[in-house]
Image (cartoon, rainbow, N blue to C red; front, side, top):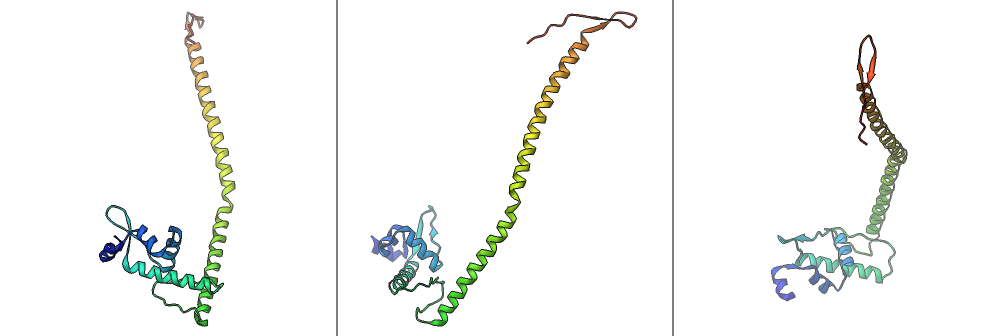
Length: 174
């Protein structure tokens, strides 16, 4: 079945796992290192091209070679770069790129932290305002009830004569 799929030049993730003898996490890591993004067909199923799998196999061999030679430098692999592990210039560039990446990440994290620093006070103030609003809404409801009762009381007095008023009985439905 795998040979039939090779002729089609597309492979499923399961076939890629079989060919590379790797789990999904390792395949994802290899894809990141090789700058390969798996595509999806019309049905939404993920697939890889035969050439992408060949590149993944090369990257996997490089990674395993780097691990076996006990090189402590983390070496990212870029799409169109062939990196030889023995070149001091390449190591220097990679180290510089890693330092740059780390500095940039730290600066971004610092800016985000500064922006979020005042958010706690804002959230507390918003909660306080919401509580005040709820209290005022309840007070409005209570005052409306009182106005209704007072209007009923006022309407129960009818003028008799000479500025005198007589209270008629009011039935309260409670």
